[in-house]
Amino acid sequence: MALGIYASTTEPVGLDFSRSLLFPIALLAALPFGPLAEEIGWRGFAQPRLLKRFGPFTCGMVLGAIWFAWHLPLFFAPAGTSLSGSPITLSGLLHYFGLLTGVSVLIVGFTRWTGAGLLSGVLLHLGMNAEIYRLFFDLSPDQLNRIEHWSVVPIWLLVGILLWIGRSHGDGTP
Image (tube, rainbow, N blue to C red; front, side, top):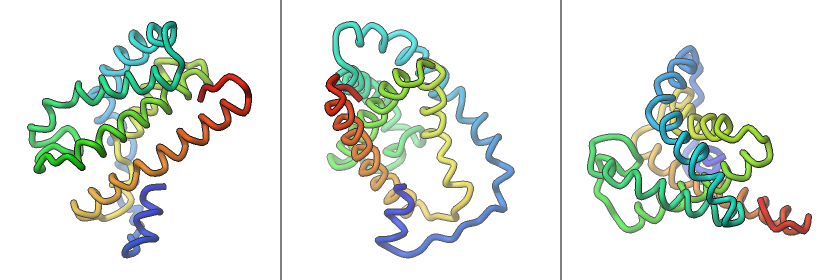
């Protein structure tokens, strides 16, 4: 969705299926570096305990804030986050915080909805980390950065929709 927003507000982006065979490799390469290891802690350990004390939205926000803090050292590394290898700015930090908290709230909601807990968390985290759109679109680093910044919009739009649906069903949860 972020790619669509980006393409509709700037120049069109070309679709290239020549690298589509790399799709499984991208998933396998991304799996151990975050999704599998981190989600054992986030969804397997912390989420069930936080849900006993808080609602899903607060649980997702707390986990998202912890997830953000977990990645702080990578901001100073050459790679690992969208902020890595770039000047660290307040807007970049706020964007990354918004990205991780929004995704975390969605993962909490999705894991509750599917009942798949850890597996759902790993798969959603994997989808985010693998950045599959890079395989199908030939984009410059600047274009990739702008697309990632747009990604916060549909994430929080979806969070808002889920909160509205939860409230309309009387339980107030996504």
